[in-house]
Image (cartoon, rainbow, N blue to C red):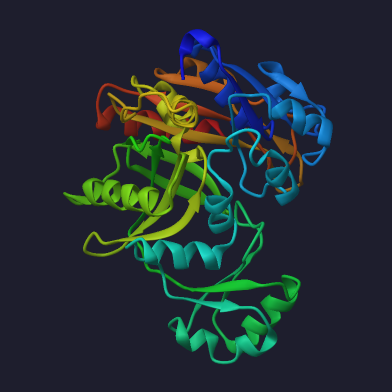
Length: 375
């Protein structure tokens, strides 16, 4: 696809990920249109905004005029994908989305591609609860098969009675029971694959979660030798096996001995990859734009140590809002603030702060300080 033709990129969704995709596309000469019903969509500030339901025929017709369509979230209504089919390439495609939006299908497809996962049992009906906990090692996490994110739609269970109660609490909907994994660290790595078959990878990032929401990410990850090579190999294998066109992020558990288990997959840019915006190389957002438009790809591993801390709506013990110490953040060397132009709400992702440093030791010292400035 010629850059001189000033291609247009459509995005299903207009949140902060679409905003950052659009900001990465603009310097490349790519115009972006987002379909998003929220009138306050963050991406409206840097992209043409089709304010309509995702299934609106007129809006989908305008989106179909783009050279290609990508997405910022996986739970895209199937009628929207059907309406775009044959009119504009949607990358990643419906088959990848069908796997990644359903936890059981996702794990089955991961294993088929050669990746290991935690033990799991599909829970479709009440009858499936019988003996399920024993099959995964006696304790586990029950998750809804669809729609859960940032710790929502899941519960930790240690007894058969607790499992039954949790399934009822989650609405008695299809779920997956995953065995509890004793891991040493959480990691993630993104892979991009163009329709032409070219594959490139991002960095292996080490992650820390708090209350089910990503708190911080650090590059380089502190892992045993060979772990990043293994993660890249697994990511590339999944991308090939799934026929990926676009970008996919794999979240891993690194267990004792350095083995990797794939925990979850997101068919898009990911919160843990935000640090690539200021890492000195290209970003995950540019990688997704390039892959979707079938442009040349290269790895986007940062050139120097970097980190990311999420800014999430926080409250004090009395329920009153807590805000970051912005003056302190601005005074800390190496900080790069990225805000999403979203109204404050408890538990809502409002932005992130990237951090850079000349070496890992300096990065850790700055990160320790930054974590005290963001509640």
